[in-house]
Amino acid sequence: MPEVRKFFIQTHGCQMNEYDSNKLCDILKSTSNYEETKVAEEADLLLLNTCSIREKAQEKVFDQLGRWKKLKKHNSNVLIAVGGCVATQEGENIKKRAPQVDIVFGPQTIHRIPSMINKASQKNNKLAIDVTFPSIEKFDYIPIPKSCAVSEFVTIMEGCSKYCSFCVVPYTRGEEVNRSLDEVLFEVNNLALKGVKEIVLLGQNVNSYKSNTINGDIVKFSDLIKYLSLIDGIERIRHTTSHPIDFGDDLIEEYRNTKLANNLHLPVQSGSDTILAQMKRKHTSLEYRNIIRKVKMIRPDINLTTDIIVGYPGETDHDFQQTLKLVEDMNFSDAYTFIYSSRPGTPAAGVKDTLSIEEKKRRLYELQELIREQSKTYSQKMLGTTQKVLIEGFSVKTSKELYGRSDNNKIVNFPSAKNMIGKFTNVMITEIRTNTLYGEIV
Ligand code: 5AD
Ligand code: SF4
Image 1 (spheres, rainbow, N blue to C red):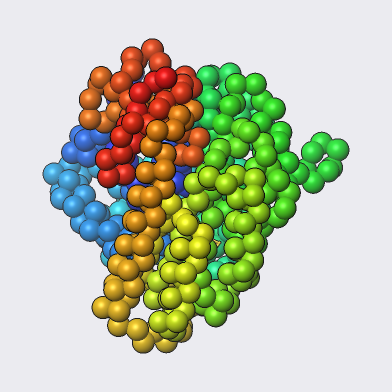
Image 2: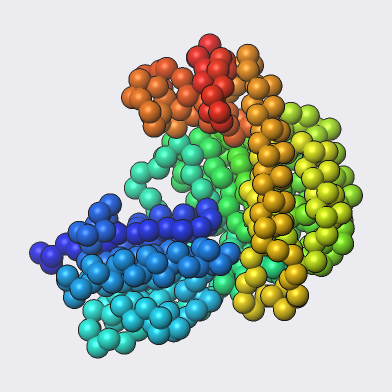
């Protein structure tokens, strides 16, 4: 019997990276002689799945690699692998700054890791590197998971062709590529057979999804939702993330479909038309408002969340006030908010940025205060209501409580027993502490 080796994986960044790391675990367990450890010191292979969306995220990578260098000093057989967006962006340069790295792989080449490990094990100090974008081939190599949670991610597309002026994603993850309808249906059918009740459709811009039926008809994202909701056992469908320019009336109409969950994450980035144009978002604030107005006609109490950047080069106080106004008018219940970070190679990186960091921080703080208030009000409104909750597991604080997610994507804790995990149940919301909801089964 060959010796079993151990791998440790650390993930930075978005849900796409979380997904890739999970699949990487499955690949290593099924094709190599590796098992996972949660303790870095025990590992023969250290994997870092990285994010480069903002400068801070990128710096975290080299801090971590510095810590792992010490582990390699104790055991020279340890291999270090860097994947994700920093890997694509920096390529061979990673080895210059961090010579302890043995393998560099990209978001589209996770399935080639086993052969890269073989190469790196030859100990010739040569970097095993593959950061190419071989279309959508990685999905052909991802093994079917042995066990599933009640809610599972399903990647339907990868990459982005929108080229917003500030964003590195089209360069690090490549242009948009869609998985075929057949493949997605096959995967979701399999998940349903394994007892999965909820799926989260994943992609950088899920709503630009396009595929063909076997008759050659075009399948849009709204059609995909229709097809998936016909699968027995799949009771709830979520999706993330979308772009406003592909949010057509057909998709809005799909919010009449009761299997489509009652939350929508739709990044807006700014409330100012001047800034939106400079960001190359290809829509105005009014067009965004129109989408939300129509969605809310069908789902008045939808949980609406967004992404916002403050301090984009040239953002005036007037532009920022328009962002605050939009946030108020849309009544977002939450938002991921960021200070603009200049990314090498993006068009915005060349634009002169004169705003002081103090002013950027002040704007971020003001925006976050407003969102905090709205978030509180949204949760308070749920007090006393009954929510259909899909029970996911034990609550983090006590084994006497379980937690689940309501249709509008809020986590709810309540007393219950283990055998309820995986079931839908009605929970009355009785208490709200900061951002956590508590309730009782009714
Ligand atoms: N600076 C700050 N925030 C950014 N985002 C993307 N690129 C940048 C950048 N250069 C934010 C956007 C996007 C989210 C995933 O990250 O808001 O929607
Ligand atoms: Fe980046 Fe824009 Fe694509 Fe979103 S839509 S991933 S912000 S380029």
